[in-house]
Length: 63
Image (cartoon, rainbow, N blue to C red):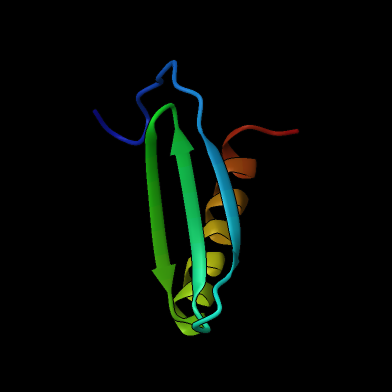
């Protein structure tokens, strides 16, 4: 399965700082928990990638 394959799956995501100075993405779905920690620079790179993907998505599917 790839990024364009639809799935009938529900998940929750929380984003926040940790007490160790990292940025945590915490994803849960059912009994699965996926904590992902990034240093602030990596988190900013991820945020830029999300913004770029949002811009590309707007170009594909107008609001």
